[in-house]
Image (cartoon, rainbow, N blue to C red; front, side, top):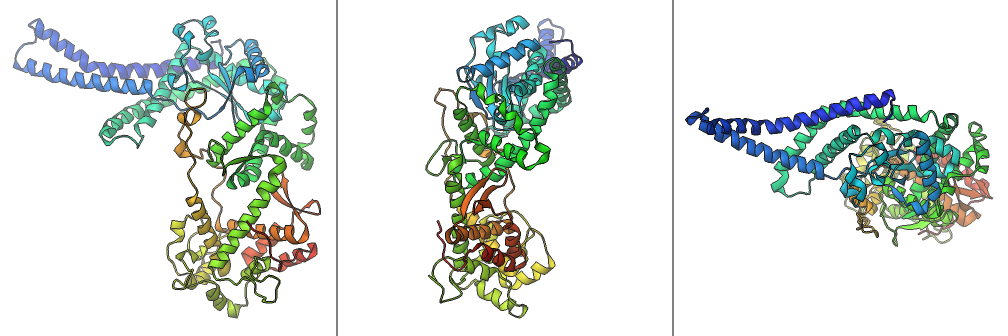
Length: 626
């Protein structure tokens, strides 16, 4: 470890953590020491008598119990499996140039090289210790753990793993990636110090022991013991929390100070690309990938999509001008032998982490290429949503076609949706509401039909909440006026339809089969799901559940798009920044959303009808649904 101020501070904090460990050991050995003294006094005829005999028996029993408990706690702390970040491992033969770049960087920084490289579907990079036996087979070189810095360079598995954000590889150039990774790689220097490494292992062991103790799947006979182990582990964690945090800050400061000697000027410019890559990645996931995941498709080239999204951003936003000119330089993904395969693996992991999808492909979970996205995702999404909308209208008893003379009166039409959501005259509002909202005693009526305005604005409620059995006819008008909210539909018909859509979607999601849990990986080691809690998926949800108003607006928009495609020759399209889009005459229809909101929120169909008329879309014609 170097002479940086941060490194010395980190070592001091690491020693403080180790002192806490030593004090805990001393407390565990104290009853045993007292028992030894009493036993030795008895054998030497110094501490004799009935009182001393009773004290020896009690103290010896207490010492035995304390030693047994301390041994169990120490065993759990040592054997508990520390948490590990879900990543895509990159073997050296799959990225020799990338490994060469990292080793050259470590040599320039005079620190040990990372033992391996892995990718994460996020815009971040860090070092992760994976030397625990649960993370892989033990290395033969680990026998020289107390060797010096020179020997540490040969212990490949003793060094931490370098985790790199996969969007960085596709958006950044090689020089920018090297500059961004310099402070991260420099952290292997302080990490190799024995005191810091021992303190980190102790803290990670305590954290893993707490997680093990709260495991609810254990036998009830062990719950009391687990509660005791968890209490001791949490107590020790609280004692060393401040020291551990300051130790990590010192390590980061030391790494940043050492990295200033390598590509410092380039790093300042590269940090701008980090922020831009984060913005593009977030936009791609929330606007483009999330609709596909909800349809049972996962885009297999997410990282390549980041480049397209950021290039489109540089074309639209003057603040991003000049960023696209960098694309002529060598991208960092060229350091991989098979970028497409790595991108596919990272894309599947992203779907698992951010959406909770299965870990393997299947009939209901298939990859989709960007060229197939409009047909496989956008078209299917719109037609599926439109079909769900008409199913709910059927359940509400809304007529298929208000005009019996219309062509194919039994077909699903946009006119049916427009006429139903249009606010009737005030004198007829209550009558129309009662006509379209079936009472609990009518066929096809369920308690799901209560309006969303009955409850406070909240994300899309599950079916159990929608089945509360509140009378929709007597509360819709009153609550819509007394409790206005931007997330709650304002008209009675809209509120009823939105609530039923929310309940229908919740039932479909509840009826979906659970994702299969894969077993071990082909290499024979524990698969990635074995190292993190699959029950907590998605680990990083992208967005909260859609509100009822948003859900209804999405379904009405889908119905309008279906009518445009089937009656006016429009096409589904993909916008890298906005996701699914409608192409009319080869141009994006950017003015549809406010007209749909006017219908959904105010019950005013005139702006949307004018828009449909201008584009030649015929709402009275039936559309094709899924």
